[in-house]
Image (cartoon, rainbow, N blue to C red; front, side, top):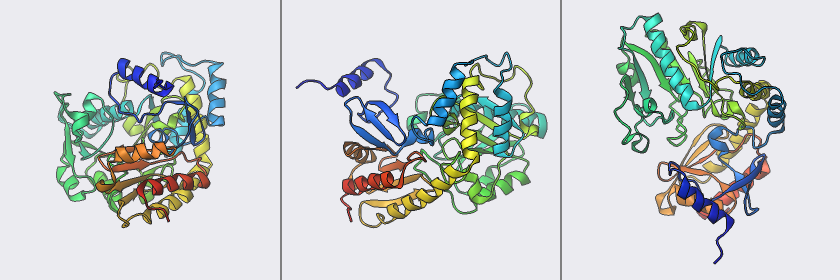
Length: 405
């Protein structure tokens, strides 16, 4: 049998790249909106959206045009010099977040590292914690990235094993447990770092009033509340930020993924002047962080979010998505559905297959999702998806699970 182009490309990738991912056996060549086409010409409905990096879809014309225009002008200066897109980017992003200052980086993990460093420096400079004693409280089952510091407070053996020695200064408590959090906070605690919705863990939504409780506790104890909104923010849940569902404003937002519009990596930490004002020149930085190309694309993302239309669409289609998925619960195949907006974690009964097996069967029917933690699949289509395409994707899920109406 003649080897297909897909098989040849996958074999070459397996031979020459580190096996740090286990992708589905599809090789994408082009994409537009909510659809991707592979090297054989087969079309697939993207129901993952790059883990929320593609909230505005593939090849969004506004974002591509913004990138092209900036490519013709200047792409990189480094922060050794000012450039003409930087001030507007920082001003507009700070305003979107209701904060004063922005520290731009590139990837989500870099932004989380920046948040950790910022909280520690704030703790020493402002709160008065003795040098070297700062502590940050985090939640079990978190996913904040894969750097050595971040995996030090991961509870996922895959992310953590064999990467020690680990960075100290973190205490892990159960997600959603305010009593445990209250017990963990001491005079040396400088921050509580949590995801408003835990994405990698299976789109876990915390109990009602949990975020409000975290906000109240951190204020009482003079501790920074850091919200990692890298996956949950920028429209995904039907609000600009997931924290808004409980009318909560953290001290610090950690942003990434969708901020780069699926075009370039852009991340940022956004906070008050009291918090980000602790930095002096040379104490933290990035050659590419806040570069002109990144700022141009991110400015267009901010402009799109300022209209509210993407948040409204995520709310409307999200209600439809969860209503349809909810009908599958109790029928045998689906044990539980969680999420907000256009974001869902679907727990499949193991007798129907693992999350990987279900994902592969959906791929065969032209739908791309990704599994996590055994028998859970995540559904997070681009916010530009049409209701008709969303329904078609749900029809394929029903067919795979044998639950057609």
